[in-house]
Image (cartoon, rainbow, N blue to C red; front, top):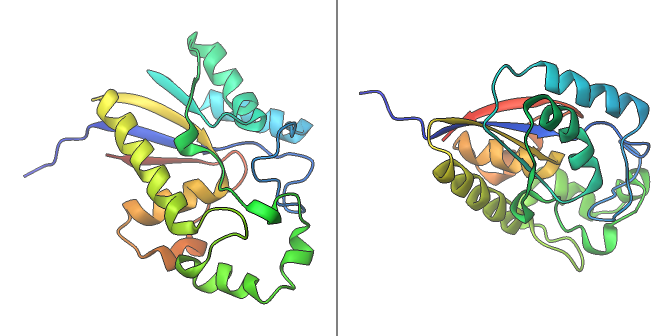
Length: 185
């Protein structure tokens, strides 16, 4: 028996920023898309023939990535804290190169289920928050096409969960800047 799809949800990672791959920006405000990121946002918008609703993390880089799609369909993005970037606590703003030298980095890479960012949230808390938000979005939009603009870690956590994999498989999931991944709930 075929299962009923509540909603087709597309998870979009924000476009590239000047610090992508260099700094862990976290929830720090004021980070905008680079020129390449703006082009990625336009490419994302060109992929859709129909969109019923758009949700965004409140951060500038996700809203800027969503802007061309919202303009194309005349939609206002709904801000959703549930798909906000992980709270990296005291790691916010740190160089990825420096962080990779810490012993804790191996836990992040191999056993994220056992890690809490100093002064921030754990991967398990982030995953629970994101999954709850996406399930709520799906319930509000039965049979519709919804695009959610978020960040790498929340998207990877969602993909891991909805694939039925343990959280420790988190680093195997992919979410490149400007990537679009469809999930059905």
